[in-house]
Length: 129
Image (cartoon, rainbow, N blue to C red):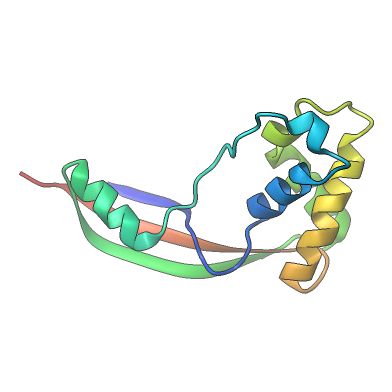
């Protein structure tokens, strides 16, 4: 089988930025007992997890990927759709403000508005006897 996912990397992920925003005083009351709804596994650790599940890793490729949404507004819309675990307990009127905080901070990581950077891992797995 082939699995492709966002994996851990040195760069701060958009999910890391979401978690940091959720912890800020402005938003913390909405995120009491909130836990991260994602994992970004390290590629070497993934090999170990696969092995423990009886799967051998025959190929594993990690690459940096960038998506250019073309504008801050389009990236913010995409982030909003993909961040419903974070925005579910916010008032509808607060969602744009929360996402604006996230997108503004993420722009500092990406280097410019509308750019999304992530590290992708593609692993080929086979069942081991």
